[in-house]
Image (cartoon, rainbow, N blue to C red):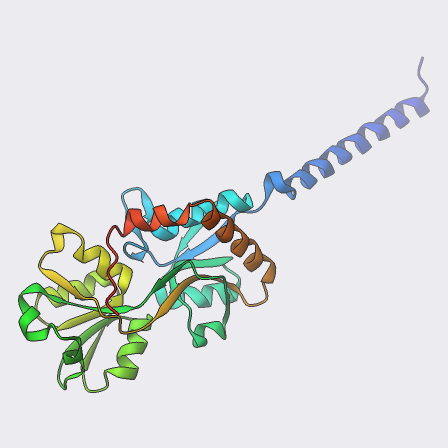
Length: 264
């Protein structure tokens, strides 16, 4: 017959074993097997860089995010924000990284830590094909009373404010809104990043529009993390470097932008 002392000791051993098992499980959740998801902020209104489709968020950034997730061993979870609210969400700590076709600028660099760029771009102007003879010289965009549209919160807005001071400027919440206004003849030019213009004018469905391929600016697209998060920036840069060495980046760019035109 077992003594009461034996039963008590056995019970204590069982409790300790259960606690140890629980701690081990918790430890596994914090290990490489159970790393937390990478929360990615994006404004999916920027085809072909990042946009909504019937399958969810897609485009260049979505493909790059999946590669990065594989490289660093973390699940990717997208959170949608209006473009002007992306950096605010990052500063609040609501997200880990912005992957949304963000151009590197001094103003943004004062608020975030940028990774190495993954693509060189610039602002281009889009016009109606029927207006090529009337508006086809890029210097004409600077004439007084020229109506120029841009997407709010982008470097296109900065360019228009700084360089097209004699033009009449119109802000739009999305590329789609700007294109509808351009097609309706309410604006003469729509200024946006080159991937958007390349993609549109390479699509037979948009033959009514044509890009003026002389770059208005020189810019670099990169990802942004919190200014204090140097470790995540290092991980992302390493993942980007390895992906580039393995030849994974260029096929993604070629898939979404089959034609890239630059006129020096």
